[in-house]
Image (cartoon, rainbow, N blue to C red; front, side):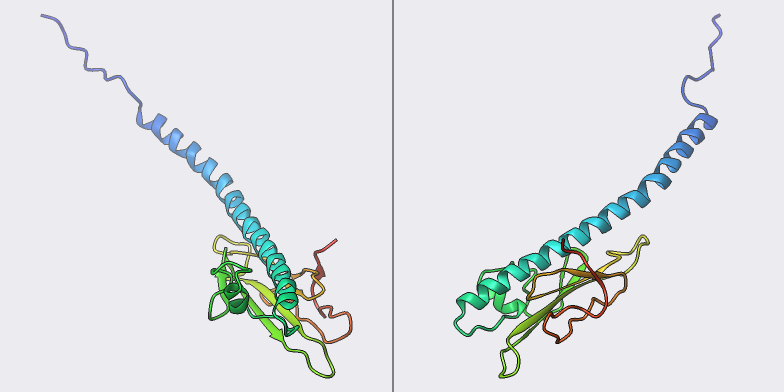
Length: 170
């Protein structure tokens, strides 16, 4: 009679635990980098969207006949920006940011101007943060940013430069 070999071929529990431990270590290293990459992509998208809004505003002002800037809905209706960015009821959500635009008509004392902002839906650098900077642009087409949940605010001086924030444009 032959004796059966009951020794199984395969992985032991220790080997499986080591593999799970290695996968856990890789995940601990990779996930924060992935979240940071997503946040950087959201910020780049916000900057690009504000540049699109700025170009659309100049086109709208040159072509609408009133020499006034338009709202996000008006820009979208004119086909200058997409429907996601030009929603009917701002703020409009796109790529982790909320976009808003205030267009002011020309008066006797001041020409028409606009203030466009992009603020993160969830501010912060943690796992749930969609952005760590807020952005602002106006008719002089300089993008400003700030490390706070509120975007920089424009002033009414001749240069229309924000009172807070940092210039992102070269």
